[in-house]
Amino acid sequence: MTLVSLAVAAGLIGAGLALRSALEPVGPDEREQVFVVEGGATLSEVADALEGAGLVRRAWAFEGLARFEEAGADLRAGEYALSPHMRPAEILDRLTRGQVRTHPVSIPEGLTAVQVASRVEEAGFGSAPEFLALARDPAFVQELGLEGETLEGYLFPETYRWARGVPTRELIADMVGQYQAVWSTLALRAEQRGLSRRDAVILASIVEKETGAPEERPLIAGVFLNRLARGMRLETDPSVIYGIADFDGNLRRVHLEDETNPYNTYRIPALPPGPIANPGAEALRAVVDPAETKALFFVSKNDGTHHFSKTYAEHARAVDRYQRGRNRRNP
Figure (cartoon, rainbow, N blue to C red):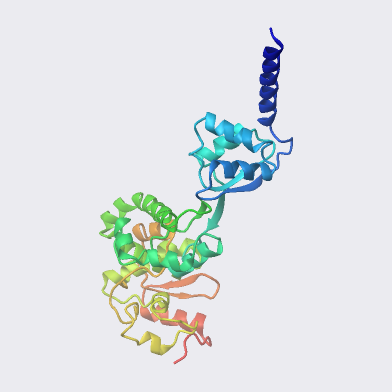
């Protein structure tokens, strides 16, 4: 073997050892750190950023690996949890599979669409105005296979895990999908009761807002269904409040007498035109499977529970007992 051949061989061995070393983990530290792949970033830019963050030994080795695996164009934008303990091949696998870091976002039962939009924005997922614009877009509502002019009532309460940068349309579709999944388990029972999906979600939203004690949901649903069956007005304060623009927290007699408020259930002898909040699974279930009761009235006992009455006379006594001296409404 000539000296030139030996030099070439030695060079190849050295290059191989250097590449092998460059594709080893940076170190033993297993603590994960946040690494963001920006939308539109090139393979070279990502490789340089990984080296700069101390996540790979050499940018050129990571880039070469990605090109060898024909994965250079497959890196997905997003937020990742990576550590120096990971091999470049593991990091490449995460980036190409889009194994992004997710964050929990909790949406409690009974929030309105406006409140849900604020929660989503506060959690760092887009803007509230964009969320509301979509939630109030009839075309988008129809695209999701729902009735009504808005998505009020269908933004299902749940703790979601979302990745940064997910489009608002996808977040909303996820929430509606959760509603659809729950409703699919209740649809048959609702049909047996003669309840449409729309009426069920409207009534469930009222039950959700009226309920302080979760175990009372079926009873409250039973009262409202009894009243509807008799052609009685629901006379529920949360519905009236929903229809008041810029409500200041003080429900007055003038509000209860306002015939221009389409949600004024002290005036309309039926359900309001739409949901007043976004109910959870138990409120929906209470509406399609209510408690068997003859009660037509209920009043707060000021401890989160209610007193239920069959007659107006009994109800009046309960009001006197539990609400005496309480200025619930100003004339």
